[in-house]
Image (cartoon, rainbow, N blue to C red):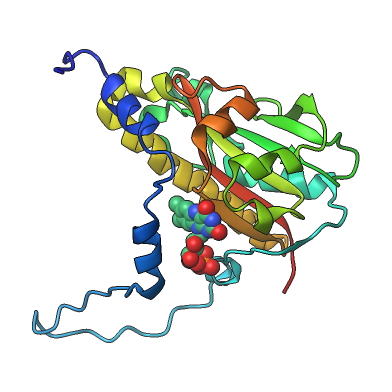
Length: 250
Ligand SMILES: Cc1cc2nc3c(=O)[nH]c(=O)nc-3n(C[C@H](O)[C@H](O)[C@H](O)COP(=O)(O)O)c2cc1C
């Protein structure tokens, strides 16, 4: 099958739809004794010893982040959630060129200022917030309730890591509206979208660390089930990453 030059989405869509979690049990089994590789360019020239890094609040937060796989369900303030969302994907400044970034820039860089991502999350035990699925409206920094309910049990079917996040307060789902970026960048735009999800997820994790909360980045979910659960068709819009946040058990 030859994909026409002007068709910017079919190739990545084929890949996306064919990259559900890999049911290769053998690869998982072998990975139990995997060796993590490091590169050292021995013999490439003189090595330069570095001085100790300067005191850095950012380094403290980066060091505080780790993958948290056990949570204690306690009440979270709405202010904490607000801070996490603002750090993750909030508006930081207006654009001098209204066409770029839709007039605004955010806490993440975005290829062409096109911002393909949307932030949805499942919330519970957040003061003053209805339990259910919400969307972050970043234009006016508000929350939009999509579906009320305690959906955590439903996630069991969709998230491979569901047992780890049973008691998290928040489970974020980063969705991509592919066309926003691919209308300009075509197949390569798909790469940009995934990179941008990484930026956003790191912001979420560091914002959680700053609030002394734990987080877990999750790529292990069944796309078709999760997309159905959230109401995405999985073709024009789909979940590309998920992050749980809550009070970590240490
Ligand atoms: C793209 C990506 C997907 C991941 N998916 C999962 C997942 O589905 N479940 C899980 O328990 N951890 C997941 N992790 C977490 C990694 O296992 C973890 O980051 C890694 O072991 C390093 O440990 P640290 O996060 O504690 O530094 C994922 C991490 C990344 C970057």
